[in-house]
Image 1 (tube, one colour):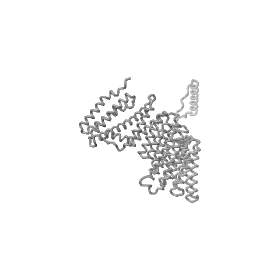
Image 2 (image 1 turned 135 degrees about the vertical axis):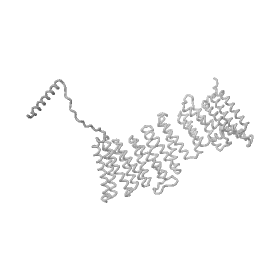
Image 3 (image 1 turned 90 degrees about the vertical axis):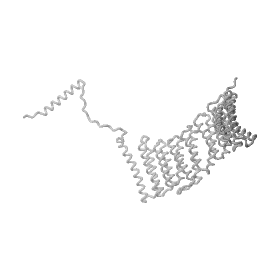
Amino acid sequence: MPQPEWEALECAVRDLTNRVAYLEQRIGLSAPAAPTASVPEIPANHPLAQMPAILPIAGRALLGLAGAYLLRALTESGTLPARAGIAAGIAYALLWLVWAARRPASERLRTALDSLTAILVLCPLLWEATLRFHAIDPWMAAAVLLLFAVFGMAISWRKSLLIVSTFATLAALGTAAALLLATHNVLPFTFLFLAVAAAIEASACLEHWLSERWVGATAADLAVLLATWLVTNARGLPEGYAAIPHPWLLTAQVVLLTIYLCSTIFRTLFRGFSFTVFETAQCAVAFAVSLSGGLQMAPVMAVVMLVCGAACYVVSFVLLERQGASSRNFFTYSTFGILLALAGSRILLSSGTAAWVWFALAIACIWAGGSFGRLTLEVHGGIYLLLALVVSGAVQEAANLLLGSASWPGERQVALWTGLAANTVAYALVMHYGREGRLSWNMRAFRIAVAASFVWLASGTAAGILTEAYHQVLGAGASHAYCATLRTGVLAGLSLLLAWAGSRRNRWELSHLMYPAMFLGGYRLVAQDLQQGHTGALFLSLLLYGAVLTALPAASQPRPR
């Protein structure tokens, strides 16, 4: 059987294929491309895609750790003296921090791993040098950690490399906290925390490392608070802890307060920034921590508070007044002023003396606020006044005489008369400077509050005088049921007087107090008079209260013009 001519057939097929391709090209057709197997591309953010870049970086970090272990081996073998080996290790860690800061800002991963390598070199080195080999003392360890933190901030300043600065700061604070707990030596690391916080605040004044402020502040607050508790707790300093002299503790408290006061003052007054939530809260915490030092340190801190309170008032009403009373800085400084003045005077003085001082401040603030048109000062005067009335006991004494069954003279008669006199002067000043045309809602509320305290003290004093006169005339053995009637009559008559003064004398703030007075009268009638069990006294109480209720609508009508 003959074999086919394969070569001729193959040439014929190739020739036919070429002719068909030529014809398709002439008429504009193209043959479909043969399907090819496509390999899926790996996304750029996939770990497999980043692996070639990560591996050299990780290898570099391991080489850095290998160098640290080499230095350790040389030191342990005696080839290098202990102090020389420690110094070489510290320099080696700082060198890695320099390499991290030299990276471009875009290479965040390399920067982070180089910074982490520096931390892994330094922190175990200091731990073993302090606790195992005892080659350096806690003060030296704290100094090295401070150098590391400040060095990290400095070398990352130009490029604003937050990664380097944050890693260095966190490493210094964390290692210091661990060494503090391990060595039971509080002072070196407390002052380290304060120094790091001061460095961060100095940077914040120049608008650097703002996000690190809360880290340094928290560490400094907790360290000073721990030192204070160790010294002032009832059981004394625990066994094994290094001594903490009182002058050193007081220094730490003052330094904590000074750091954040200076930083806040510089940023808000000299740089023109507004108070932040951090600054407001941290200043309050710093004052609170400083006050936790016990009775031995309270007088010193009280004087500091009074000085700072006076400075806040000067800043508010002399320097910041031109920014407007609605500015955040003005409000914050003035609020700190009154809080510091109240806290400092209350710590330094007894309750009675503090009340006298607050009465004087109340009158002075209301007068100055009214004279110079400073509503904030007037409100502060009202706050001083109300707190003085509470601390002196005048409010409680008036309540006992008016709503209770206390006899005259009461235990706080001097406080009651002093409070009534100061409140009368304050109310007169408010009425004198309270021009109707410039009253806002907060001024109206302030005026009502001062009027209410004046009415409360005056009615309590009137009730005490009437009940005392009743017993003076009829004797000490006269029925106390009629004293309850007299007190109810004072409240009923007070309501009528308030309605008349409010409508006929244009004292609108007194009109607002008419119904609260009637409510108190009704409360007294039910809670006290009905419990006396004396028919005649109850008859008079009901008669007085009912008559006043009947006459009240007519008394509250405005005077016809």
